[in-house]
Image (cartoon, rainbow, N blue to C red):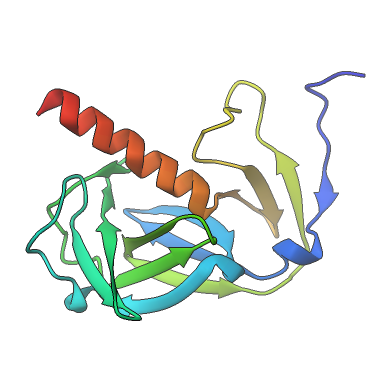
Length: 162
């Protein structure tokens, strides 16, 4: 069996409801079941943060770290561009974090397929889990655990460089 052979599969029931979020023209998808809340970026508290977090937001009596991905590489920044209007709170049962986004969109279970990430891009701890093909577009699917790992890596780089 060829391990790099392309295997398309219909989106499963667990992937049926997805949320698309946009940052600087990039669009990522994640499972709707991991989205806890959508808050205003205006509710962000900037005092008492640990870089690379851009701030904290209180939800359900707890402070959640808020990250602000930016630019072509989605580097985390503490500088919040004015177009970041939404704060997407994510929880998968193990990880809790919030992301500042330019736009957020709910996607129904429209005709789409899930495809593996090409072998040259596949990393067990990479940001992208799989590709989602729908209509004439291809989007990248991620999840809260992968986003948490992505943010932790940025924190390690920040601490080494700082």
